[in-house]
Length: 283
Image 1 (cartoon, rainbow, N blue to C red):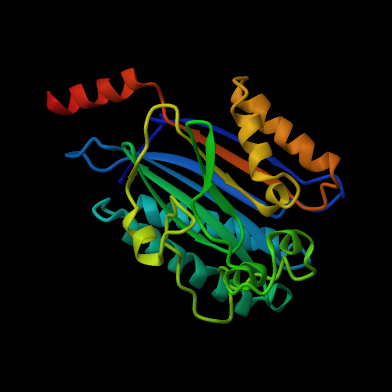
Image 2: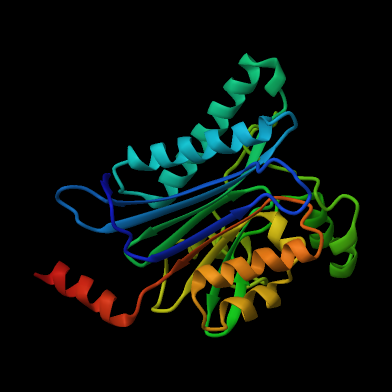
């Protein structure tokens, strides 16, 4: 794909180490492209990674994850978005694993990852770990991915309740992440409804974004301390999006801020911009 200096969606981002003096092990990047010289379809890639591992190894793992995924997307031919995402995550997993094997101080390092890839107005996602992707549309919020955690598995099996999950001592036990000793399977499910099965969720890839839609990628430093409905009410309040993200950070920090907090917000532009893009394609 061909790099572009302009985003075809509105993009906003913020990252904060939290209020406990921790090293910020979150990394992110938002990059834009055109598919090719013959195909001017705009593409936006947003990647957020939350590092795992002590002695700054988590910080290194998240940076490797983001850099590898963005590079892999940039080098793709743009013909199959879901395959592009899957390949990029597998490549990032390999890069982190090799780095950990070559440096003993980095053994066991890893990273969660949340990726959003938008071809024109079509949204594709891929995740591993407990970083999240939300769709905010028509005054409602929907978590598009599923956490890969012990708590999520326990919830699905009915072992614990939602209330118990919020305070469970194993809530940060991640089952799948980049750099894991076990083989990974990038999660390409995109849930528009909690009752959808896996195949229905996979079929949602390529979700058409409509004007005003917001796609939020965030690390668990936010979602551990700020409820989905609070995220919705904050981002729907009509203020400057940068200020709104700042309010979410402040809210998490006011409740302890014990982890790094990162949020990326992608917003579909008004209808007139999509109409202009369609007119250009027809010409």
